[in-house]
Image (cartoon, rainbow, N blue to C red; front, top):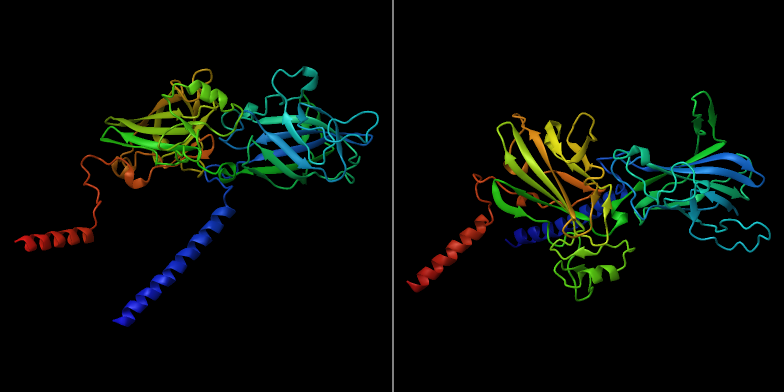
Length: 455
């Protein structure tokens, strides 16, 4: 008997080590793939640097950022791009953009450069910039829309005149250590790589010119680098069950007025307006309405109606952030019945099909000038729509949570779903086993002992 218990103890100890190794191994795998998005596996921002002409001490280049991400965009206050020069280059002038700092240009006696920093940071110019300071695809305040939602505005450009840089393809050195903020962290940029020179077609389509030299930089996004906590959550409800499954408690943080006062604001606070104004509108950190989940965004999926051949869903997106109006917002939903979507009301729709022939992922966004602006927290801080699906007799069911989405993204960030065992069940389903068999047996034995004691 002693050997039996010793063996169990050893096995438990070994199991704990095994579990620890599995956790560490899984964490290492998770870290190495954190920038991979299975719904947009090839999404990235590509920075193309085209040398257009040589100057006495350098070159003039057009730098363009292409957003090849299907549903993730860069919203106000926009992008900022940084790098480190390989030699002692300076920026003589710019169009369509500007550096945030000039740096120390005291060694120049005549013309003073636009920027002399070893590691400059460039930002886009604002709308309304004079035409003689603009180039194509510039001056949008750093906003770049997503590739699917608005391909015409999925790029941003600026022109830079670089000095002390070399005047041939052999003497020019590529910049290093590219960084892209949009406007906060999240993007990781690889090294610059020389590629085939970009070719340009004239307006009359009769002549093709090309850049003197071109290099590319690829930047990928990781939600885990962008913020420490999630930014959105999902709640569920249905017509066949009175249960409303709320977002998990403390999904995006917890209310903590003892050590972090002002972390949230109650909606009925009589000084709400002054609190919001005094909290710093330019801050990137959200100031959220006090809720159990503390998320800036909540997406609610409600199974609304059931017809003979169709079923209807209502989607509501609520903004709990007092600091942010979400312009050009979008939603990505994964559900197996999207291949039978019949009609959608008041939202735009596009199928993404990340898995080739499997049509189970949809991108939804607002109609321009109608509901493409998701206002900050308050009475107008929500948008909603309804989706009508046709039933596929071979796969359709309301049982076991099939009617609810598998994943939901808001503005490219993965939203936290409720645990699967909390989904609303059908009324005719058996009650959920909340009490284990061993607990029931022990309870019966305890009651029997009490009855015998008082008999």
